[in-house]
Length: 156
Image 1 (tube, rainbow, N blue to C red):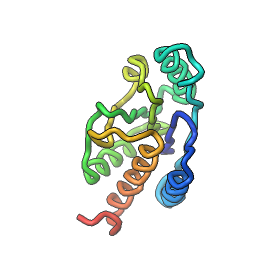
Image 2 (cartoon, rainbow, N blue to C red):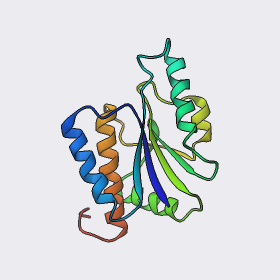
Image 3 (cartoon, helix red, strand yellow):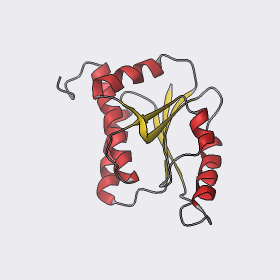
Image 4 (cartoon, rainbow, N blue to C red):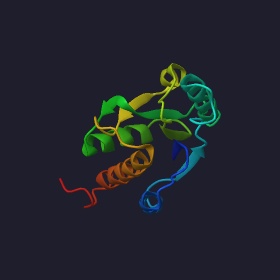
């Protein structure tokens, strides 16, 4: 199953982009992984709701009915790293073309996309900017892969 990370807006901080590229490259050893970027609507729309609707429309263009859709949201379910690895293994065993994770825009997700989502997860009770969330998520996805393979990256 292919794993896709959809993000809103570009990764502007070079040090975070460098870390992201490092983990994206490492992930290729375990899974087929790609990133897709949707332009932020924050400064292009007249309202918060209009921005969220425009972002939802662009996200939904990239999601097929057979895809697993997992949203990253601060109000989602939290996992420990080993629990997240078990959840990823469950996802990988499910039928479907792609496992799509989405880090939304600054205003979050619309009720429409939340309804379509197979799951909503949280990286932490803390709030991170979207660029840091990308790096933290990718590191956790990499960590999950190493846990599933019994490799020493994650020390139990």
